[in-house]
Image (cartoon, rainbow, N blue to C red):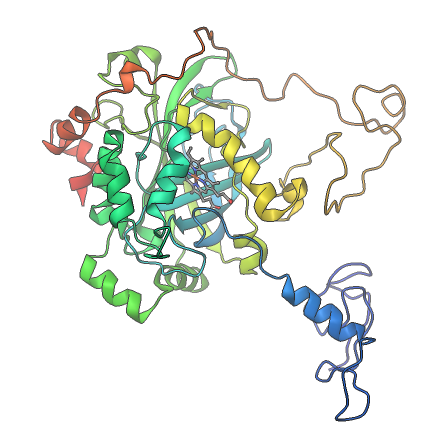
Length: 471
Ligand code: HEM
């Protein structure tokens, strides 16, 4: 096949062209004539330092690995589309939920929490359910789990929780499973973890397929409409295939037979056109309802029962495209709970508040640069512009003389730089007052009745959809 050296239909000069009969080159575009033999002095002689082809290739290979995620290291991902099926402009001005039939591209990453990137798919563990919506108002990352509650109430306990659930510090095992001594030790000293421990020890923690998992935003968030009216909201994903689990015996056998059971299942289903789908539902309530509950809606160890606040399905997500490249997309995906769009806002849940710091911070350590947003899987699909500049691995070439705002040089010209506008993100208005204290609110104090209430099966059959014995 004739090789196409530079400009082709799929690759222009200056772009990388990995297929379509491309000529093999170095990373600097120099054509390679021999990719089998390094440069030697004589057929059996020493290799020459001069061999820049060899050195560049080995250099790049030596640095292929980047730090894996500190949690949720093992994940499987897919692209898809979210369609609004029941618009709710009266509740939120978020554009993706404004019009029936409106489509928003998404990237989803499902993950285990405790194991490393090369660990197995089927241990007993919470699963991550992270969705990046590429909306026309910027990226909204709903970084949730397949269990609707969390082990701890305050972000300051997260490093302790994770240290206890990951492999034990002296022996380096178990690699991926949550049920082991240091975890039991930690949760036995943390009564607030009880509710989530029961979920984690249920069948929920060994999903049959990533296509058969529910997803939950866990925290209470806020919706804000055009008039600035604020409601509380909890987010739910419901798999169209139903929620299904493996039994322990099945998962133990699968771990021996196929470490990539979930990853393979997701990839093959999508490749075969058997696209997984989820309904997206919201539970919306106001302050009066929040006040009527015997626990705090800001406490992430609690659910809002569905017989009290029913779910409203507002959209459907279909995953219809496998990543082209596992590293470029799955590994380099950076989800940030702090990525929200106009119409959605954070609550004061103290776990959520800590997360808002943690994810932005961790991306610098893992992806190495503040410019991780330029990686294609992370970049917004809408235009974005600001005066943030430079930094490691800057690949954009901003134009203009003035890189500050306001300025009178470029602003006055024909091609002015970006300015803030009233349509931009505005935080929900809330009165905040109080003393500076390291204290847990008393409304977070009851770790037992909530769980017991639901285990007794109080309420309608419908309510069990949101709880354990649904399985
Ligand atoms: C204070 C509490 C928490 C902290 C500090 C925290 C921190 C982190 C960090 C540092 C990562 C790695 C991110 C990366 O390197 O890309 C991560 C990943 C993740 N976390 Fe959390 N987390 C917390 C609680 C939660 C909760 C409550 C949930 C679920 C609602 C959750 C869901 C996830 C998911 C799904 C991922 C994987 C994202 C991906 O697929 O890349 N985390 N978390």
